[in-house]
Length: 365
Image (cartoon, rainbow, N blue to C red; front, side, top):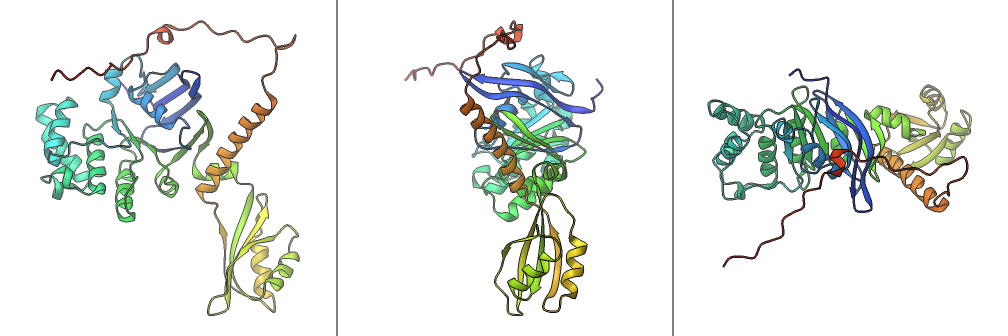
């Protein structure tokens, strides 16, 4: 079967738990070899979506496809093509690293003749060769995360799904995991859920922001900034008084405002952030005006890019405001021009019973 351009396709996906819409009609596509960041507040629907993609949970309605095949149609086929690393990485603490990967290779149905090579490649990719004979329970958190990633990539799947892969790691370990994930670009499609936004920005080609079960922002970091950030910020290192700086800015445009300014350093320079409403380019005018001002000395000037945290807050705030407005307005009664919405006939997949967890049996002892 030829692998399609989009290895992940989600169309109008819904997942309902009782009266709660955990996932409410989301749609997105991910191209082969892309690394995608999946962001959202706690309870936004990220983990539910990822579990549906892995076949662990069943969608209420909608379609999720992996490599062109609907997940619900052939879960076993899908699980062969997905590597999954959950947030709470469950590892047997009494096994050695290589022993665990041997066991996982058998579980993933890797042919016996190819297992040794697959294990060695996973160990090498995750820099675990020196730790392959160590007991997992005696490894640091960073090494355990690498064992989880080695397990995820062991069968060389088309899609890797990682839920909080860098949670609880120190900065050095975070860099190692980030570089490891980046090395998968082009080989595998990777979806990462994380709350460490700088890591997402440095690693991912595309970012999807979800809130209240809906996608509230999607695109590259630059596209998201263009959508949600409505101002321009410059950072300037300046020698002089605040009053002189304000007077110089007023000669350029009245909308140039000093948002904040630091204390002066030992050489008398302070760092000031100048904010302009809307997307305006005043860089050249600022440079010319400040460089010739008789009472100001400029050491540096640069345009400051809004951090991804600002984009995330703006996107989620907008969705919160929409929810608040809906609650204030209340339900609208149907009128002559607004017929009652009828519920569509359920499809066979919707009417199929959802598997329930078995009740815990008493200990025979």
